[in-house]
Image (cartoon, rainbow over all chains, first blue to last red; front, side, top):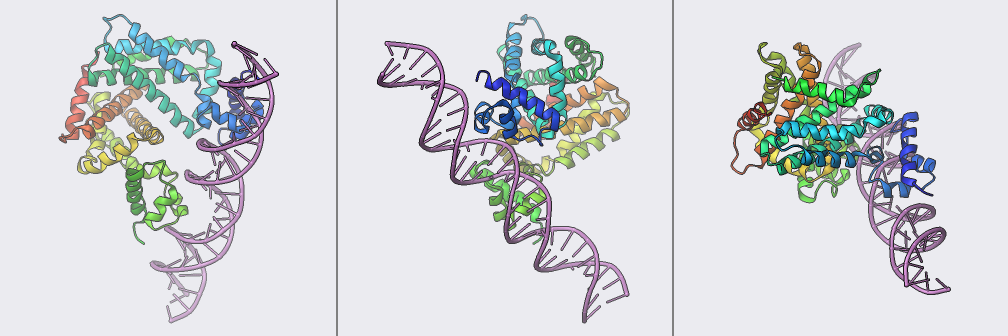
Length: 181
Length: 181
DNA sequence: CACACCATGTCAGTCCCTGTCATCGCTACA
DNA sequence: TGTAGCGATGACAGGGACTGACATGGTGTG
């Protein structure tokens, strides 16, 4: 059985959309994917994690983009460049992102996990800024700010009827941040 | 048996510090507090929540302070005023805050819950700013920024050997934020 | 064919959390 | 004073998330 992992992810998305996260059992997901509950937990550390498969990739992408950004960029602009690179991974899969986002919005436990992923992204971004020579309160602040821009832009991107470009949403939100007093 | 709730909170703090969060059973906490596991779960929605008793109060305090702040304050400064008011609740109980912080740092599940509380604080702050007339991307951005300042300042406050004032830490961090480019 | 290796299945067990019903102490009120 | 009501707790049963241990099968390599 090839791609058991992919089947579990798809099954989980379907079931969560059909009956909700809490009403879906880990055994249900496994069954629909044609595996055992035990193998589900060998692939995913917990039931929530099945929805967050791409987050590590996005984190790495953002991290690398920050290191590759022009050296004369300010900390905030460098961090934003990372976020833009990460967000770019999503522009091709808006449909999936929208469905996933709806599922997460419907459940506090999933929101909690998403916050953890965002926090990981902040940490990774902070670390990247530090290797660029940014000193300490500034690195964390810039990283937090950039990830916040991503979160707000993303939520606008998935909630808008007529789909705009995600990079446009980010630029808009970043402009509002720069204007903040 | 008066103050069962307080006894459970204290017992939990002790046990988490002694053997760690995962090695402590809900039944263990209840037993040390002289109650049943069932009553533990009647007081706290889950095992983690026992560590976050004051967060709702802090959230309300910040919210109210924002509404009471001078009308001519910028969105960011108003949000910071809220955070300062909330943080002020902690200055008298630094010892407890430090122990609690250590426990949370040692466990991802607890960090996740803390992130949820911070997100709730962001939401509450955003809402307060909106009722002050702040419009939409700005309200969320200012709220996020202010709560970030709190998080960074707090982590410095609890990790410093010679205890500074928390308000000083916040002012320092806020200054770094205003200087951010 | 023999061997190692990796993914998976099977089974038993712990702990988190919930619904349900009985009990007990306190308070209001006749 | 008695008693009805009420809020907090105890007792019990059960479902679902996860884990450890061991067995099995399929695959590639010599």
